[in-house]
Image 1 (cartoon, one colour):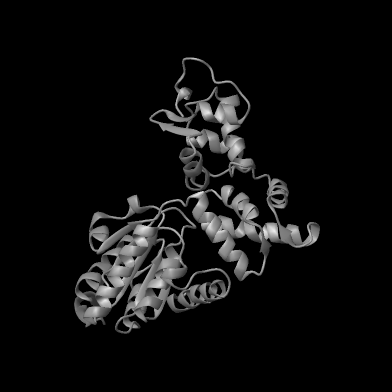
Image 2: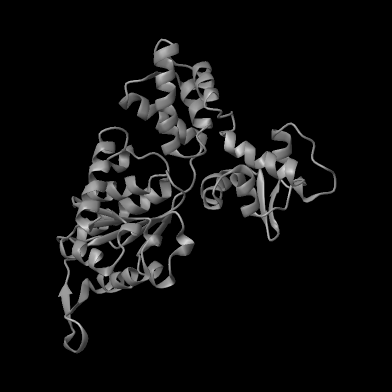
Length: 339
């Protein structure tokens, strides 16, 4: 896949989503108040100087709004947003082609920036710091390096694994902003806003029920809203109440704590097959039929946030809260008494 095609593909996907639920302005973006305030200040300062913004790093779990904030920054600066992702930039030539097509003030958005190849990452250093890149022409004894000056641009990097970014890369960003999980109240606002856009008749209690089961993540809240909308259309006269939301989400095996079937399978496996742990992630993965990376990145963060799972040097252990959730009694005198 070429860099140009990859960029156009991402732009098309984002444009389609823009027509649905993605906020386009800071005023429409719900939650992440401190980050939003910092970014608004940076935009105002850069526009006041007639300059470009400093490079911005957005990190945090999937679905919290990193891509949305990148596009909002572009809109606020009146700049074009050129988007790509780390895995697509396989060699320096891929990045060079994108950088040389930038215009002054453009915003380059790289999703999953921690997955960029090392050789490509090092190519970014001079682009970010000096707004220039060195291109090698010819090969062997005739090889020579030519420096190309780039227009001043803003790089916005997004990552779900900030710890995998090298120190030199991280230090070249002017600001690092970590997005946190949303509260149930904030997610309720997200659901109500999305319901208005989708022209869905929803009661506040119905929105609250969806928000409570959305694992603190707006993307999940919007996906669940679409499902509940379909359920209400077919079985509930097109209105979402708390009871309708409960029945629709129960059909997906999502309980009132936001846990799905795999969450419960992981907890029950640790408790019933391995006496509550500690047990290694690879062993858990084989037992539940899921990839270790998926468990670590998709399921574990929420289970740990809810105090149902603990990591120890020896492996994963189920907490007392996990026992109670599954209707079991924790064994006395063991580390599972942590909540």
